[in-house]
Length: 362
Ligand SMILES: CC(C)(COP(=O)(O)OP(=O)(O)OC[C@H]1O[C@@H](n2cnc3c(N)ncnc32)[C@H](O)[C@@H]1OP(=O)(O)O)[C@@H](O)C(=O)NCCC(=O)NCCS
Image (cartoon, rainbow, N blue to C red; front, side):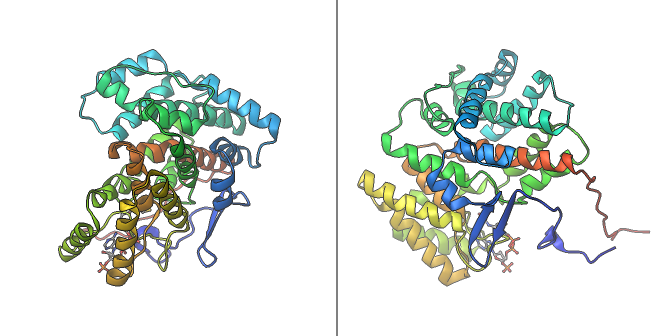
């Protein structure tokens, strides 16, 4: 057996053509394209297409892909009814995970793991997960369900449904940019979980459910929901909050990253810029001042830097999105990344079956 590395830190577990993180040059590359450029210049649908089909769409492909997403934006009524019966206090990530699991019963190609069938399932999962995320509160609190508006983009639909129609024009662009920034990030814990499931040749729904289960944890996607706590305070209150937590050896959510050890997550840098611009548009810079102060404080005190979840939390708060939806929004975006990894894994499959170093009695 090779040497044990806790948490598989730095250990390559797959060869992939999907995404790489160039830490030195602070760049994230998705299928040869810069994530920063994609986030600032493209629509989410184009990036999802890139992940699934390995190239950016031309105009006809984009039209066809958008049409397929619209057609697939339906949820079987039995799934909605089942979710409506869940307890009202259920965490939206648990509701979403259950919903995606339920959807698997209605996919006629569930057990076909060929590349072509997997690509079609990816579109269904993308469309349906987005619609479910937009309707999480409708289902569990209002006991209703709203359809998407085909005139809106995928991201705008999710924002509009979550905000129950109460959006403002300035929100669309930063929401979409953040949504793209969340789409794919190499072998994050949830992606690895999805690939492990896919490597048994189980279906894509199961792999996505595994991804959702892993994403909920506060050390991964769940961090954006927890990171929002700090934005209840003004600058001095936030400093007190941080010092108090660090004094108790607790973690500040939205800081630190397994891959970015020596500087800010490049996605967070873009989100910080978005926050500054958005604060300017609403005429209130409190959230930006708090975030910037805490960023400097954490660098001084702990040599730790913000990750995307920190600045995403501030932006979602500015948009008036309830914190319980932050991680589901992340999930709705990351489905495209998970699907790309499932397709790649099953196209060139080798079962994941590592070994354990036994420390128990013999
Ligand atoms: C992301 C994360 C899990 C990476 O963890 P990791 O690579 O395993 O890093 P480690 O746990 O080895 O941390 C190294 C040190 O930094 C500290 N640290 C790491 N993140 C910290 C944080 N957010 N707040 C305070 N201290 C932190 C650890 O306590 C540890 O200190 P120690 O050596 O005194 O024990 C970790 O930084 C974290 O928990 N961050 C908060 C959750 C978060 O934002 N997750 C989203 C990631 S995109």
